[in-house]
Length: 291
Figure 1 (cartoon, helix red, strand yellow):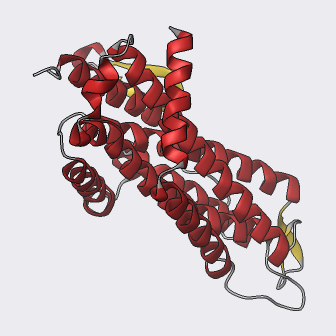
Figure 2: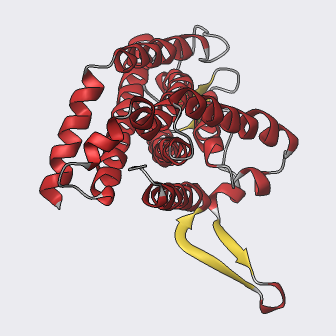
Figure 3: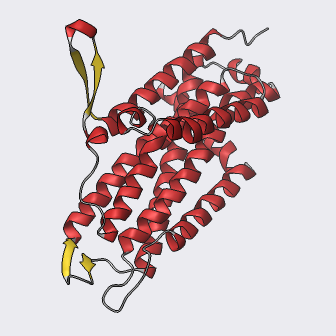
């Protein structure tokens, strides 16, 4: 089984490298990351304080991961719908492979691409930050004191990065789910982006409380790097409790049970990945492809 999946992953990666969408998307993500780092940095530079590299890094990573999320939504939506659209899904399943093999292989490729884009964004944004700003403590040029030490700022940066990986992967699996609901790749992309934008732009604007927003995985990358940028400016001192606390399932008169997956920024995207993957495979497994 592992050998079959590995060969399928290799074939999918080869198809990906030959697709113009891959190179265009990487170029857009890199460009957006650089521009985000340059234009979303600190408000001003003084004689006593230069631009903080972590602030520039946070601005670039915020924009870059947003673009990477959209790329993964599109790619996930094309994974299966593209095969149905071109009729190649029947050819694939005439080979000695199972549907589970194909699903796992495509899911692995989606995860690898997400990790590649995340790594690219973090590397480019850090390179821009170090080339334009300076690493070090956050210095208050009016009180002449240090607001945040370099070590504490580095810890915050590592937490922000860790908080932003799983949501991008969850976006890819959301696209995979929608990709199995239609045979048209165009419709799959349109539906995926529409639903995501609905949640991202409308739902998150309607529900302003952190207790509700923490249930939307797409909110975490922007939140993490906005807070990190505030830390690097000396205008924030703590993370919000709603995103740090575990998710609790209410059981009515029986009380409540916490989900033992860690804080909400881990639990929510992990549950999203598991739900989208299980639902996508169930739809794919039940489709009559031979008809």
